[in-house]
Image 1 (spheres, rainbow, N blue to C red):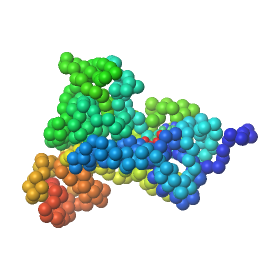
Image 2: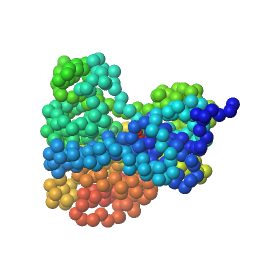
Image 3: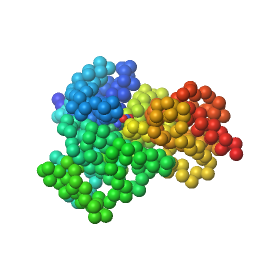
Image 4: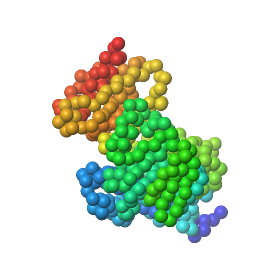
Length: 446
Ligand SMILES: Cc1cc2nc3c(=O)[nH]c(=O)nc-3n(C[C@H](O)[C@H](O)[C@H](O)COP(=O)(O)OP(=O)(O)OC[C@H]3O[C@@H](n4cnc5c(N)ncnc54)[C@H](O)[C@@H]3O)c2cc1C
């Protein structure tokens, strides 16, 4: 069939979404090997620089240094360029990508439709991110002005007197920590029996203590039965008969990859059942040239993971094809004060594995005394069979900056014997690593 004037054959690669993953792929392919068109209906740069990582870390910092709410909001808004994505768009254009400011949809293999034009390309990359889940709770209406997601919490300028957070995970806890630090009375409701339920139980204890010390209400085993929404506030009713009132209800129960509304059905796929292989490529009977990156890949939802995915996809599109999504250890932090960290598999992943030994260390270095640091705890796991470190979980002052050494130890498969003999400078919080590695060596030899 002859192409219509709405057909475009100028590009070899179409990226749906202009977030961190997309920007990283454009950087990785800055060699002219692909002619790239990227579709983005909202902000080039996606959520991280505008409504996620950057504003949340800025507000956490300003909370810690005691800045007043209006000053913190001003600094946050400056830092996110008042939601102007010009610099992001320019950077991608400078690298040769063409930006189409529109939502895109897959219409057939190798075909993308956006803003009235049909694009025919060799490769399609889905980098559409994830969206906040809204649980099925009686009375909960996601469109009500008093029901917020993290986007609302990180663009709001009004000081609140009270907030209820449904969800005690990383995003809910960081936002609770921010708002309580600026004087909002915050209560967090979690359906599980402990916070960070996938990590070492001692980490959970200290996460709950951290939130409590910050004045955040911690309710576990919360069975939310009903939400009542009014113009002036919300009431949340739990199965135990208790009722909790607040100005605003923040819903932070998880985030689902954006697989709906992007035309996967047109390729014969079920958008509720997408599988991505370790190269990032869609698994399907028809071997579509479709790749999924970042939050849309349905794996760990972090910016550094999105960047890694882009490097792997670029590697495959460039024909080298040696890298995999699972060829790195994934570190993550919750940036409360003190921060919580996890590097590698969870406690739940390793539970019952007889080959695994743990060293469990309470934070008590000289620096804890000089700097009057609060309690902290680090658990580090190793395999008996290989004598390599495989995982670490902890919470303690400055632990976010310990993750790098742990990543190198795990990714580099450094023998425990070697790690136990490495020097840590005195007096630092990092001395806890020396203690943990020495304890692991002792356990492995006993
Ligand atoms: C509150 C919060 C705090 C966070 N803090 C951290 C942190 O400290 N550290 C960290 O590593 N991670 C953090 N994250 C996670 C991090 O923001 C994400 O993992 C990362 O931004 C994912 O990038 P992405 O490119 O996959 O998706 P996004 O950045 O979400 O980009 C996806 C883009 O796709 C676009 N899109 C959607 N549908 C279509 C379509 N049909 N056609 C075209 N475009 C479409 C969207 O408009 C969006 O811009 C945080 C997340 C939240 C919510």
